[in-house]
Length: 225
Image (cartoon, one colour):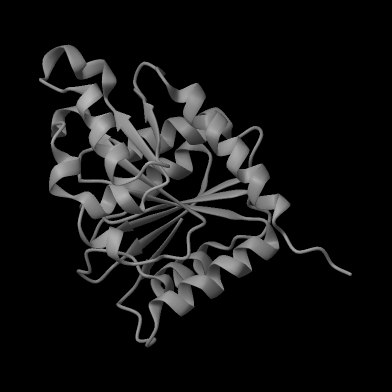
């Protein structure tokens, strides 16, 4: 398992770099999913469960982006994914240049699906295009149902909202209907999956979406004449 040290991209246009990276991944048929959330939302646990469930049918890689430590990448390797740990040199997000260097260190050859577990916060990651084909955010039940009101850009930029730790619903004042209404007001196209990685509730629908997106991504690969 590799650990690489990253710093902010010095390239002038992150959007240009992101689009180029996205097209390169499209050409090789690898779907990159950018996963964003607050610290403690359960995204590493969710990823571990997802990898364990799907590793027999898809070749999966995981980029773990953190300011320090390699514990998450170790967990991902144990789950059955190809993994690399990226240290962001204090940066609160990944950009396209940083993502490219992490992908090159891991190697994407033969991978169907790669998750980028972005640095944990609901502000910076939403502002920088990483080159991912899909953006997914996590909101855990203990965080509360008011987050779409406080962090609207994150919800507006995401293709999927995963509401995690649903097994904790009996213990928290969390209005599922209010979250749905607020998220859909910001982004009418967002898909919403309530899940519990601990019990398995909702995981089938989330993993079905991933399979469909991997297939759809492959269908966009340019044909060679």
